[in-house]
Length: 133
Image 1: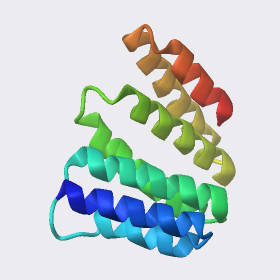
Image 2: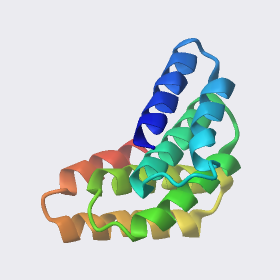
Image 3: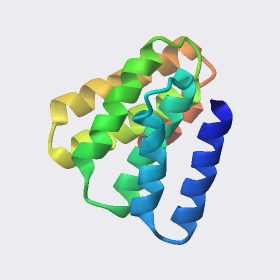
């Protein structure tokens, strides 16, 4: 199934380069909505990518937030994936800011800082991602 995910990611890249963001998002959503299970990491990467496209090219903050919150649920069960967790925290913080959910934004930023403290050497990555949000 990973070959299918990689094919859909490549097709999404193609549509994104052609500036057809709607088709790119549809390719990626096919992974999330598939009745066949993909590895959690593939779904997480896909949801983060969908959220990134939505935030960059549309005003659909709520849909981006939905995908990021779903990726957070999946990320909780995976002990590694430090950079993906940081990216998800950063983007979710941005979504919360855009919808005016300041308390939720503070909570997610604190989770990012806690993650950096646990990992020790990842402080620079987290700080850079949180600053870019």
